[in-house]
Length: 128
Image (cartoon, rainbow, N blue to C red; front, top):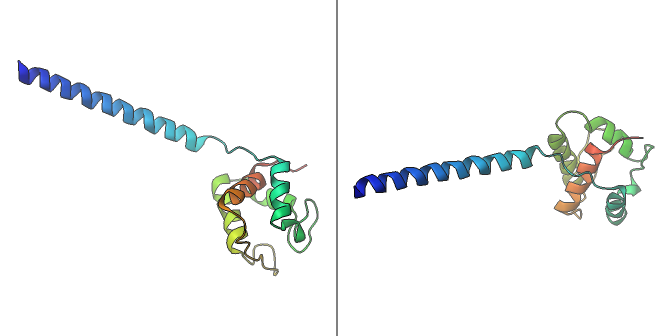
């Protein structure tokens, strides 16, 4: 009788554990699929001012680098997460050849959180 009770308890624990794993996986999937919060223009303006982005980029017209509107148009379609990552790498490590002969210098002063804010803003905003 004791073995039967132990066996039933073990089976119940396995079932409970499996249910917790399934619920956890469901929550993780929902979070991963949730759209990123689009940062406000005010949040981005503050970062762009502190990190000197507007020295080379304008909202609507090409300067040394492409306008923010051009960047959004290029990266708004497709896999937003992958596109945001491409933008983050270009900001933090620099790049060349994507927008012509002028290279994008690395901006190592931009923090990881600022990179996330800028790249999410660029791929998720609506160009007016």
